[in-house]
Image (cartoon, rainbow, N blue to C red):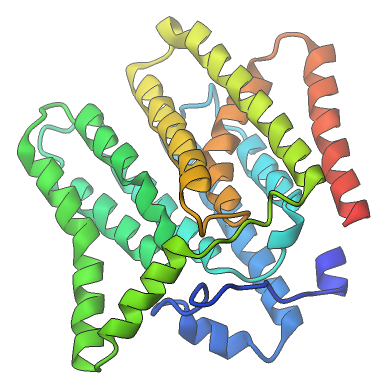
Length: 303
């Protein structure tokens, strides 16, 4: 509500909002700051519903629960600087489609369509938010571990799917004589020094609490490992690799900053949800959850 009542424009660095797929949307909404904040809220709700759908489809958290959706919205609420339109939200949407198609490859002998689709949608996601390419190794591991029979075709197809959107993009920009400008935008999206987190102590504290919950949740999964279904083990392993990859991107890519936290929040959500559902002590479960909510409320009030 605070962001809707007092909307703001995201402080883009040069080239951040100029990706080929995102630029038309940016130009369409640049006349209304309120519309940009409203757009981000709508996309977050859509992402939350998609997160809920993926869990219902593959049931890797004990039972069907709306908790992952609620937690995702809460987590994003704590990222005060991201309560406006940014290409990472659309990138996250196509990344979730990629994960959905990847998980559908489980126990299939020839998962050729799933392999290609997973790479293709991650490629589209990267054209919105270029740093999503950091997740590709996790996807490669996923296609290798989920399929019943491992062979080179799945690896080739997922790589081909990833490359195809970039090939089409460069073909278009070459024909329209924009390819040098496009390369420059990709360079800006990797090498621009951009760090909103270093100067925000409250956000650092919030991230520390989330990381603590995630590591504790991962420990709980390890304790449950022998009792989990084979598919659940593999899904959570992929989520953990995505979590580690996104954190690595935040640390090693100069242009990655608070917007990368939207991507990190997705595996966060599943790992933390499983943890809260697994807590046997009601006192500790309620205490940790209320502390989580209290931190978010504090961040909202003091922003």
